Length: 284
Length: 339
Image 1 (spheres, rainbow over the protein chains, first blue to last red):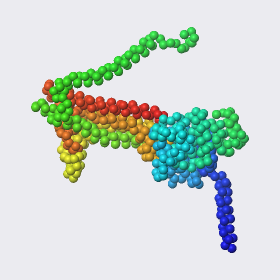
Image 2: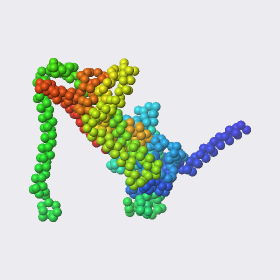
Image 3: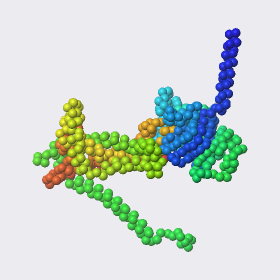
Image 4: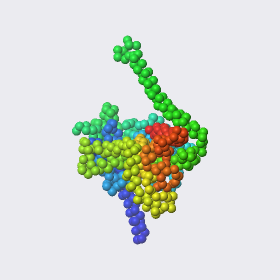
């Protein structure tokens, strides 16, 4: 009798685990669920009707022509848009099931869990070591800082190039190295999600390729969302791709999501005419 | 070449002449300015030579100034000049840098925006521009402080500041008189009123230059810090101030140069007493005030002594200014890397 109970318990536990993983599959492991109904800068409507699920350990790319609001959407995901005066937003962005735009949520706290890498490499005017340690100190990290710094630099494939000059200024590095330093700085605190806003647009093709390889490596530990102008780049690295386009019908320039799906489907078999045209390069 | 293209032509002869003339004119004016500085220094040095021969370096260490006995020493004045300037710099820098941060980091713009928002006017075509304008307006107001004549500052110090602070000063002397800083009573003109007025006079220099340094910190660095989840204070303290530090240091040193040379207000407020004291309430004297007070009645033989004092003041000021410009140069070189 007792044995059966134990067996029952065991099987129940198994079922629980199975159910939990089933639940996770049902929500497809979505880390950030972004639903933008309307987004304004002052009186200018910048984005409408865009919902993009960012899935765990996947790279989600946002593509589209200039001014379609893909960077704006990305900046919504960690509330960087809050820094723009006159920014207003209707909709919700769920991170770990909680709306990050809820009044009780502190924007700076959100940014500590959702890191960001910018278009221009922007290391601080301090040493390479201090650049990477910046986030650790910000979070009053009590553990071994030097180890974490080394780890982050190794994971961003920069360690071998800088290990002998950690006390040199971060600005002394080349553009590609600076960008990898910024990635190291962002991942040193192990955020769950890494947002990358055209991280390669200021870099040469070799540096670009290194960053792309890096992204693919990093996705085993982090979830990545990237904005890119480069269709080949999205095709090479992204698991999921969202295509945004500009709606000029009411006289404004309002971006919206045209199509979202697996990258293979978006690039090889797009459903929407706009997507087809854009991928074929018939407009930019 | 005119047969190749109808429109493009080489510069005409007159254009070339104007170009050359303009270049020489600018060169001439620039050289004249430099020559002027050199001439002034030469003239002062020449007049000071007899006094330098007579009194030697002991002049710098002497503490009495008595034209009747012919005893001259400017140690109290050197002390007073450096002491008042240093204290004024301390106060002026705290207020000036704080004002610069307030005027460059969007505090004011945000506050104005919130006020407008409360009335639903934040996107009003005219009022909506207020947040951005408010900072510039306030910055200009602070810079207006530099336009007030020195003698007005002096009068204001005499008739407003001294009566205002005297009760507090004397209370401090009564209760905390054992601290050397409060060692004497404030009877009238003294170090503290001079320092307060001097601090206000150098405030616009510090605010304007510091604000420029803060504003020229690349926005991408700000974004990087905010993107890491830093609060506004953390961003300002850990990233923006260090990046702008050299520009701010340049501002402070330029202001120091100004404070050292300030004459009229100090002559009116510092008390003109030949005394070395750390007490804030004691009267003192500065080199510039000494010169201003003694030149009108100086006998011919004493002019050389005053010139010697002027030379010392010039040397101190020049030294500080040269350091200031070197720091500014380095600051702008540092910002190039931050592009």
